Amino acid sequence: MKTALFSLAAAATMAAPAMAEMLELEKDELTFGFIKLTDMAPLAVAYEQGYFLDEGLFVTLEAQANWKVLLDGVIDGQLDGAHMLAGQPLAATIGFGTKAHIITPFSMDLNGNGITVSNDVWAQMKPNIPTMEDGRPQHPIPASALAPVVDQYKSEGKPFNMGMVFPVSTHNYELRYWLAAGGLHPGYYSPEDITGQIDADVLLSVTPPPQMPATMEAGTIDGYCVGEPWNQQAVFKGIGVPVITDYEIWKNNPEKVFGINAEFAEKYPNTTVAVTKALIRAAIWLDENDNANREAAVEILSRPEYVGADAEVIANSMTGTFEYEKGDKRDVPDFNVFFRYNATYPFYSDAVWYLTQMRRWGQISDAKSDTWFDETAKSVYRPDIYLQAARHLVDEELAAEADFPWDSDGYKAPTPAEDVIDGITFDGKTPNAYLDSLPIGLKGSQTISGGGVQG
Image 1: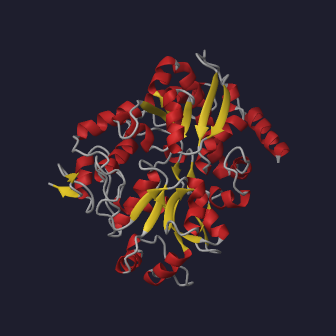
Image 2: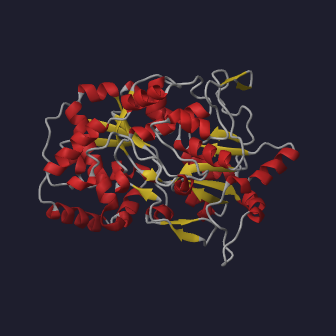
């Protein structure tokens, strides 16, 4: 396989009409952190394909124990940058948790997550789910199919527990979104109670991604929301069933970002652009020719220094399929998207969505104006840096002019109702109107006080 990878790299080099033009770097030795998930792939590919070296960058990639350790490493300078939850730079910048100005010049991917329940919960859900002509469950499966199970737990005096990876993770917000769309309350945060379980029907708690399957198998949690390969791992181990992917919750939703300290970007502007160039090239490689390189990517990611899961498990989603019940494998070509649909462009509207979810569930305790959402998004998401990198790549004939949204104002067109599980349109330019349209969650000037909603 190493020979095959070398041949792929050599072929790519021979096909390229030009080489990367090296910028005058302020810093060339860098250490980047990541969590063992398949969506760290752009970092691994940029390293293994030599894209960092093409930019004159000598990069070390280091797996981190959890998201907090990773964020702290970027803040204190032990890490020069990292594969991050999209909510982390935003939360840090506004002071939810650790206060620090973190920015992102590069969005790492779209989609890539799933929600899995234990075999026991699945058996109880299944009678509530319509079937197709061949007898298989009809997807997408709404959380309303879970509601009678949660009610049964309540009647028996038992909590219904689910895991997510971090309080400001996409997984927390996607799990909450799915539950709320099905009429189940996932709970509020308040300045005094940061458990996120105020008024909750389903109790959500943090579990590191690689530990999700074992934690569910032990009975500590009844299900979880996580990125790959940890949903497919539950299928392979025979301990659980993924019931929905985030592609089915919100088609082509933004996922991870590459985060750096704002001070780093100011001190090392050319280095920042060079890193972004290498990551863009990696994303292109991952998606080019209808995902032709995904098998090679799976081999890279399966190595212990990266994700370290079996190649067969990683391939289940990375190569365009997804297995729900054992044997129920379906085509999901866009389960992992790294470059298509402008996946790498850091859109302000993506940042605004994360901020609306922080406000919806009380992590942002007070009402904010639409202008505040816009200004906060623009202080963290940096398409200006991204487009500098893209311009260099186009000029070097390493990327196509048409592949980048040069004229964008940073906001995507509103997400149509049919692309979201609850049928509610999202327009990043009107965040408060969007919050008001959601049946469950804080609205207007409402706050959480005394264990409940006020106002």
